[in-house]
Image 1 (cartoon, rainbow, N blue to C red):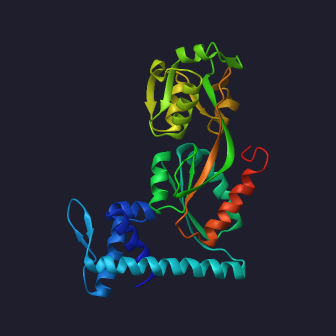
Image 2: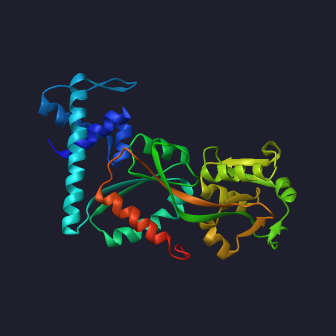
Image 3: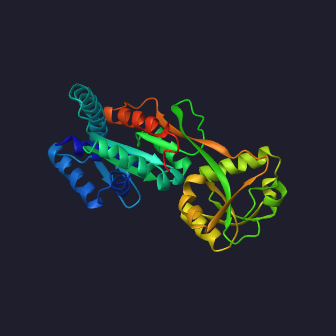
Length: 303
């Protein structure tokens, strides 16, 4: 029996699914099944009851779950204390990032972090803000990086990078050479937006509502599930969008998209780091938080 097998077991128990555990751990489903089978052979009893609908933990599994939590927590404490003593940080870091962060910002930060700490294994899950918050609350992620402030007493929330949402238009759009457009002109434009639950969508709607816009009056012609799809639709002339400045650096340089700002509407925001106050923070997590804050405190860190 190994601590990794206990981690696999705990993940299956938390997710109540072999396939979901495999996705979380970035291993195959047969590998998950193999580890669970090995544990069941070691203890001589079934740890889960399986059927086509769900996975249910057995009484023996519930007992092991309690001990697995204690063992894994002690392992994390030992790794942190020894890392502090030796100065060599190693272990695993599980991050969740909302789409704009996960696609355009965090990979570059992680790349720099990994060059300093090659022994660390970093796992990055990219999904929308609501999902990230849920995963952090369930302690399935060490840290979450999200696009708008989260108000939850169970979470520590800290801003780490400034952002600005800008309106982008196709390069040949009649308004493309303007720096600012009036709010009423913007409201009349066809909009291509991210799906409900997106941090960018939420902050856009909040700021427009604060400016007195009836959101039902917006001319939304398309809703898409990824930032790349949104950019492609705008480049193809389906409409305009509101998007993070970090997500369109390449397109702005090439001229395929042009930026404008809405007059008298503040679309600046912060990106936030979140973690569960109840979750033990390993030395790896502490080191990454320190690195992230330092990296993002530089002027134009991603340019």
